[in-house]
Image 1 (tube, rainbow, N blue to C red):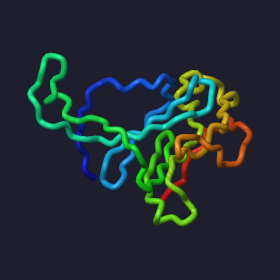
Image 2 (cartoon, rainbow, N blue to C red):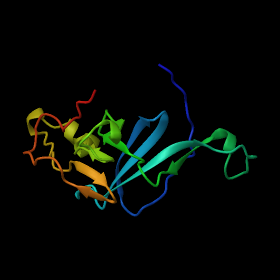
Image 3 (tube, rainbow, N blue to C red):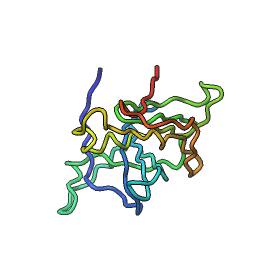
Length: 163
């Protein structure tokens, strides 16, 4: 297994919504960051943006930005280019849609929001509600609920079982 440390300049673009999650996915040999937004914490997912890790051109440092210290940047992708991205807490994967008949390019996501709620972890295990409602597929600029509706789980949020 190969490991490499990539350093990015801190800070992100602002899109006027609450960032629910950031997922890292390796796709076609590239590192992608998938960001998930909600209008407010208590509302369903409204938007995703996908970014590719890109090496910055060599430039001299200036007082405001030491390029040598942060040689990597995130560049927003305009299209998924036939990718299927499965994102979730602890497991995110990328596949090519043309290899899986019946699937279309898009971002498939799970309701893992309670994973980010510290209060859930310190409750009695019988009182840990995982809503399992904000699941779906994001494509063509909109989120669609494409999985069956389920009752809340008191054991865990939904998870991907992927090869």
